[in-house]
Length: 85
Image (spheres, rainbow, N blue to C red):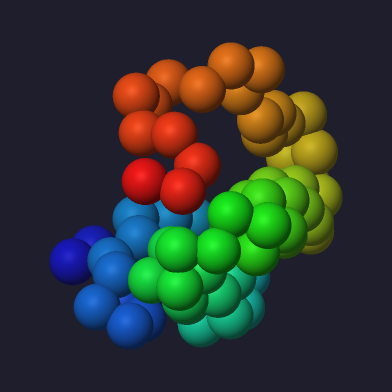
């Protein structure tokens, strides 16, 4: 891995700079939270986790002085899997 990389929980992230600390909460809190909701197959919990993940992305972007890197949720489902499957 290069100098701007971080590994946490088995996930490798390539950073554009050498300050991987800003990705640490995302990798250690937000992504595992999403994984728990997926494993629980809880659609309401999943929706909350998706919004938490998006919010975490935006907070990190603001902290890294790139608030114009926005994350928007899709307006339509891209999966054929329906809730409850």
